Length: 253
Image (spheres, rainbow, N blue to C red):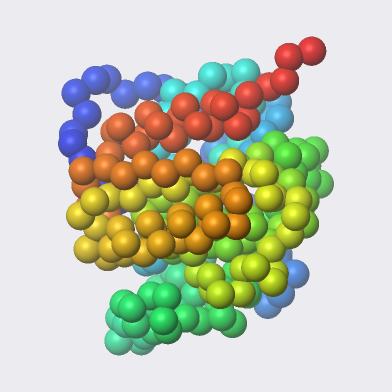
């Protein structure tokens, strides 16, 4: 998991869950394995949370109990593993990545083929959750860094309304194609973007530019920045928990 700053001074919470490792075959040549955390009772909502470059499905698993979300939300957390591929900026080293990174000048040199392949794989995860009884409007797409970029990219193109899109320390990939590829179903879907002021991996200006682009297209976007680098902090975790509680609130009968 990315470093959490500053260190927490309060005791850890405990989350009653079941942990499963499953395989999901995508509608492409990719097969994603996932780590899942089940709620204590029946699942009635899902959060699909993508990790960053070089990490894996267990990277954000420890964040679940720290969110301290009400059990009645019935959230299943699904953490997929990105495919293993060579990454150009790392000298061609093979690692888990949602797409290749050709240059640290991220918006200028991109890997459309890799982005679209991962989009199809994430679509398969969304479809699987619906087959398991979770409607699209009860699913949040979330991610950190590259994973957050894929949450934005995929969520805005998905044909069915989602509960929300959570994008941490990231940017909008293939931004020039969004206007022609976006779907109206998620025009009003809540989006939460957050970034570190001192992020040296994905500078905050990339996140800010992406947020402004989305606002110009009239998306419902909430932005937060924090006194940190390319990481997560405790205030951010609390803000994410509040946002998830709002977008996944169970409608009163």
